Length: 533
Image (cartoon, rainbow, N blue to C red; front, top):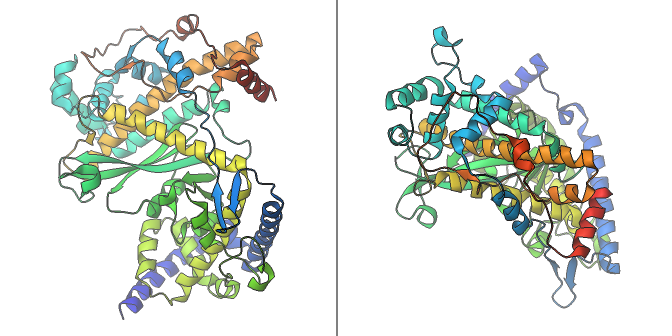
């Protein structure tokens, strides 16, 4: 009975959203326009080809990165080496002069004009720009978890000014708009062409980072593993080419996979990734399907290939795979997908119009009984897309490396965010409500984004210099340096916010830089040849 009530409620919402979409014609989703038979013909044909390629390659021993144990019939992936040269990274940034975070923000604002995104909360004062110094001081106070009172003690900005700036200018929409301006500025720099992992696909990685909070809020939850006896939240971040495009706070009790599509689809920046990578927490029984419906690709990093074999399905008769080294565990029910496609279209429409979030959809589907046909059809479609991806992942060594590097980048970003959050104490977010905690987190993202902008500006100037000189060896080394570094940024001491014209002189800095690779000559030669190619 409960399932019937929930089902009727969901169907009413989906019907209204679908009718709205039909009236406005605001959705440009190929899955809604193409016949389901055509879509499935293409997907099932691709799945069949991948099965044949995988079986032939595994039987003939062509996959050197895979190890198949004949005795146990188990498949294992050989680990690849990390491409990040931490020693080179440290040597490069250790040559740069130490800069106060206040100076970095002032430099970044000259290029990105992110301060213009902060409008006054009162319409009558909306045309009056915020004071750059007090604005930056307030943002730093929130990002470093100092609060306005402590910031007044360690800076030349008074508490009254900081408090008024916080109440008047710091809101979630203005902070997100400011972050988008900084992100766009990074994407327009010359060095940005070095950041993509693939020429055809734009990768974005998602992952959650735990933060403790001091106040009991709706999203704050206890977790003995992460917060001991305290409470906390999770900052769920999407990072693309070292740029934190989006971040949302979710409860520590929520499964991260419920929010993967939402953070990708609601991206407000001008950078639009078409691949979403993540760890095993990104997987549930519907995410592969949802991403495929909207033209995206879900690429999780598998930690155990043998476990993924249990999720490999085929589209035709199982008897055709008899005697293969690895066989499908079942056959996908194509007929059920086709019969339930009208209901699935309503779900796609509701998600596309943002009338319903992914997390809400998944939770509603979980209330259905296991024999509900719409739920089963969605899960069958998910099996199809997941099987296609898994077979690609096992065969393509470059794909595995790109996904691994994408996830390594977001882990590096989390280290930067930790350094910012713990500059004056333990890792936590300040605020007395969910909204204030989110403001603190968005301020932390803005500071991290500004540091990445600052580093990217230095690297861009070097790139232009080396290209003009024809220094290909220098460019090959430069490609290995990440903009996510903070050893040359000072978060402590007395911060002076000034309106003078003194700014960062990048040309003077790079004139003193020595860029060299102290690794083996053979390895450096290979790096240079790869870059030249």
